[in-house]
Length: 165
Image (cartoon, rainbow, N blue to C red; front, side):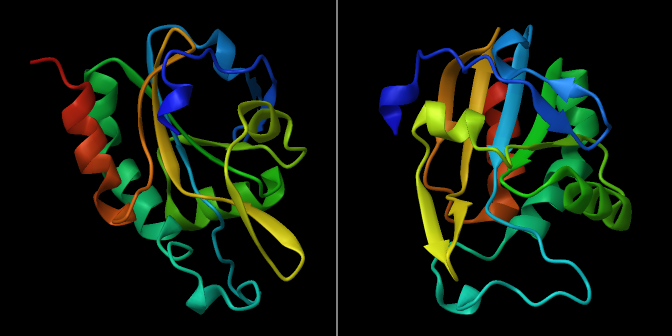
C-alpha cells in the first residue's frame, strides 16, 4: 500500500454523517482519514463469521480513541474523518450513540475506495474495507498506516506522527 504515498485522493464527494459532502481531494491542510470495515448496531447481528476474520473487530474502540483525541488533532490543525462503506444513516446512528466528535464519511457507492484500489475483504456476500489510515496534506497522501494491528492505538500513533516536533 506504500505505492499510494504521494498520490492525490480522488475527487469524490462523500456524504458525511453531518449531512454535508466532503471531497477528500479538496481538503486543505493536514487531514487524517482512518478507514474501518464496519461498526455494529444494537439489534443487528454482526456479519457472518465476523469473529473469525483477522482484523475485523476494533472499529468502535478505534473510533472512540480518535474521538477522545480529537481536541489534540484540532489543536495541531488536523482535520479528522472516519470512512467506511456503510451508509450515512448507519454512520449517523453510530456517531449519535457514541458521541463522536468528528464526522464519518460514507463510501457506500465505492467511488472513493475503487478509484484508490483499496483492499477489501468479503463475508456473507458483502465487501468491507480493510483497516488503514491516511495522513494527507492538501489532498495528497503524505503517509499511511497499513495494516493497523491495534485499532485502539491508531489515534495515539497517528497523533504522534502529525504533531509538530
